[in-house]
Image 1 (tube, helix red, strand yellow):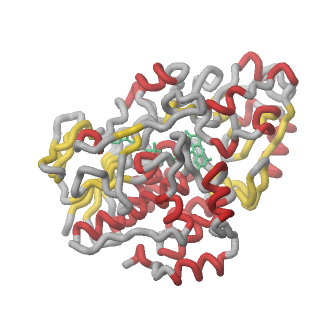
Image 2 (cartoon, rainbow, N blue to C red; image 1 turned 45 degrees about the vertical axis):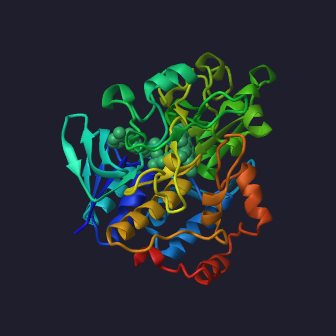
Image 3 (spheres, rainbow, N blue to C red; image 1 turned 120 degrees about the horizontal axis):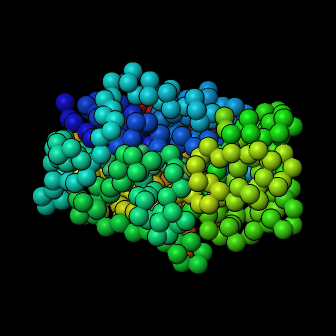
Length: 416
Ligand SMILES: Cc1cc2nc3c(=O)[nH]c(=O)nc-3n(C[C@H](O)[C@H](O)[C@H](O)COP(=O)(O)OP(=O)(O)OC[C@H]3O[C@@H](n4cnc5c(N)ncnc54)[C@H](O)[C@@H]3O)c2cc1C
């Protein structure tokens, strides 16, 4: 049986592992922390705008497992908030244990506290990765799903210092790009002013530290929108954040909260002293990142060049998914790219022709889409969502999506 190693157990790594397992391979995830899902432990927004279409395309192609799981863990469904429609919010506290069980039930082995630090590679073919403990782990095919966030040095240089985010680099060691170790070429995303990387766009507040009225609104509607006093409006933060889909005036003029188990506040950071002057926030506390009063994690520091099969350029048997595979923001984007990477890793191991997704699908269009300014790309808003609409790719009609996938000959392809 072919052996496939996935490095990094975020949404893209989990999706890659599931897709690879379904091709009949023996699959093992190496994860440097003690949790699966990586940044997925603090996000939660699914199915907003074009992400709905992409989720349904994945389901039609046979990659429904992670979407049914996030749907099942939803705190709220079909929610509209500024610039966004029909969003589902999954509970970020409940999702990880469920993904962990799913992966285990599927017979995928996960090695936690296992950080890959180097690659053994000859003429573009990897034979093993080396762990921080000095162990060499061999396989036939590898998938780099290590993300682009951190390590601490990048957050110090391009952010406001280590914000103590969920990736917890000081405890578990820095992120390492296996693509670059294997001879691939990494590049970085840019903010509007050209600075490398971008701040993650939200912080999580402890619900019990908010007023009863805000919590009531949040739990009833899924969102709460609290206008900010004039002196606290800071539009400059909009251009520093990853999530261009939220770079809209209402996100500067209001505190916009979303119920993801925590109260997710849609701003990269907010000085605690100032936030506590807003009615209802007098006792507020950050739960992620701990230093959310000052900064946030810096992302898009190590995206790798790849081909249309999700294979890292310059290598033969190394695939990539998630933020590693492009300037893609989001869980849905990570699952979509990770799934194709995992599926193709399995095809490669079986000596089969590799799969590409045509641009008649929203996912295929995303994979082919390029932005000249080094900015990030998402199904959920900004330039790529506008492009989806122009091309007639955005729809919430499941029948149309089913037909589109059928016409492309892709129905159930990930189950084959
Ligand atoms: C605060 C915040 C809020 C967000 N909110 C949303 C949202 O609401 N909706 C949405 O769609 N998206 C959201 N996002 C974006 C989304 O979470 C990410 O784009 C997506 O989850 C990235 O997944 P990934 O698998 O590519 O990378 P990551 O989640 O970064 O996973 C990478 C994994 O690799 C591991 N790793 C790294 N190096 C190594 C190594 N050398 N060896 C072993 N393991 C390694 C890491 O520990 C990590 O677990 C949010 C992001 C943040 C930070």
